[in-house]
Image 1: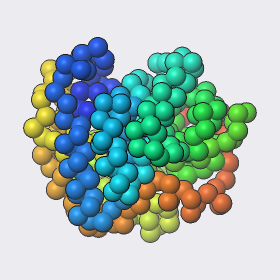
Image 2 (image 1 turned 60 degrees about the vertical axis):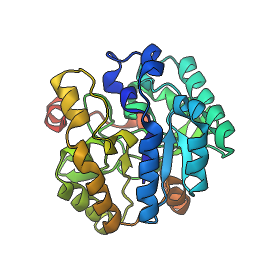
Image 3 (image 1 turned 135 degrees about the horizontal axis):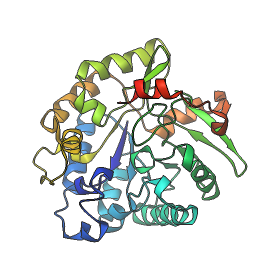
Length: 297
């Protein structure tokens, strides 16, 4: 179970509409929404990993202490929610370094993990893994083994593996997928949880557990349980992706937490680490153009 802790106006799809210079002027709802998720998790005795945006941690340190006191793992979602492949190596280093320092200072925990905004470690930003290793991160959860218009390395492994780089190694925790022939179809949460029927997520997680004998990685954002959030004027596709079924997410989440057992990322990876094999992402075959078009979601 994982939560990407960011406010509703900080999503990547709003970058061209809500500049970072305007973030301070927007009504913040991240504390109340995260506390709502904490209450839901407590009701079902679920502990998870909260990938917290450094910008949020800096302004609401008490929220991080509340998350930690409830027994959840706290990890980094970067500082300013910039897409990794739009940053330079040094800008990315500064972003994750600042985030790690702010989070650890706010709640006194050691940050082991990182998830990139919008899963934006792709083929053109694999250098980010070297920076993560340099900065002491032990695992990354940023690579989705699918083809998507924003992210993904379709030919990368579907299950946890060890990434070997010149700088060292770290564990990669991919977003969850179900294999259908040559395609990997996402079942991991977020928009896929809201936009597709609930049965798709339930079936996909059950298949991963029973057939593949692997854990599923589920993710959600605090704003996804907030149907009353202020509406931002954006194009139809962004409206559909962001606002569709917000009023159904909380009820679906309760169903999911009743149906499956969840744990923080650190616990799952600690159990799996000794048996993980290494994979060289730089050598992953590229998806042929015809298959890429077919796989686009």
